Image 1: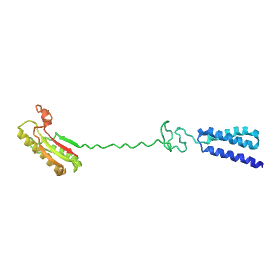
Image 2: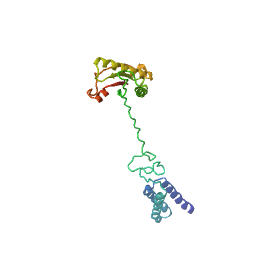
Image 3: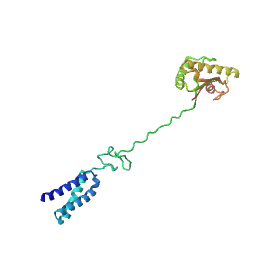
Amino acid sequence: MSIVRTAIPLVLLTSVLTGCAGLQKTDWPKCAAVGGITGAGLGAIESSSWAGWGALLGGGLAAGYCWAHGDGDEDGDGVPDSRDKCPGTPRGVQVDANGCPPEPAPVVEEVVVQKEEVIVIRDVHFEFDSARLTAADKERLNTIATRLKQEAPSARLSVSGHTDSVGSDSYNQKLSERRAHSVTDYLIESGVPRASFVSVVGAGETQPVADNATADGRSMNRRTEIKIQR
């Protein structure tokens, strides 16, 4: 009988301590309370006078064991250290079951397609009083052709030629038309689909963008514009 009376307390106390091992360090008051009740019961088995000592001893052992072997939560996020895959999370940050802050939702930037764009070509000067392109003009247009080939075939291209006010209106009108066609023909030869061009016109001197009274102004007015409609 004495062996049974000795074994039963040891088995019960071991069960209590094993249960505490699955708790967190901060749960030591619960372990102490359960250990105290269990210790009191175990002490009472031996003698009623042992109940108090059993409660004190059981509570102390259970609390100490829980604190020594219990799971911690150093960053205070509510997830035990043994399962916390993101230790050191700042306090107040919401975490998931693994102790990690939720992944931020990916930011999807909306691509805004510019429906209409105008390429202004001012550094294509042609040969003097002519619509014939110079070597420098062709080099400049090669860059533009590369860009326009990327826009084809969905884009619609409109080419317009412009002159300054030097010369008669009729002469400038015809010169602007010839220069617009000269630029268009070179772009087509460079690989831009002919079908992409919806219009090729000359505006002569009717649409100045600067003052024709100055050399700088006249230089700005001598231009070719390519409108891209997507």
